[in-house]
Length: 53
Image 1 (cartoon, rainbow, N blue to C red):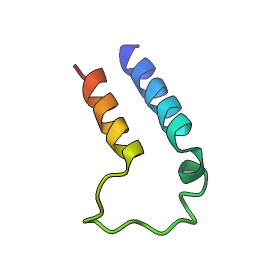
Image 2: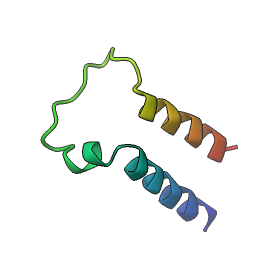
Image 3: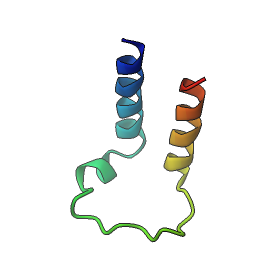
């Protein structure tokens, strides 16, 4: 149950931070592998690390 809540919160956070990238993901070109993390991605990584303990 806790994992389900975590996934839901993570999804809400992604949508809140950058809804356009989620909606247009199939049309958008993939970023290069060596591209730096965007602020939204950085916050997502921090949030995920915090939620995982």
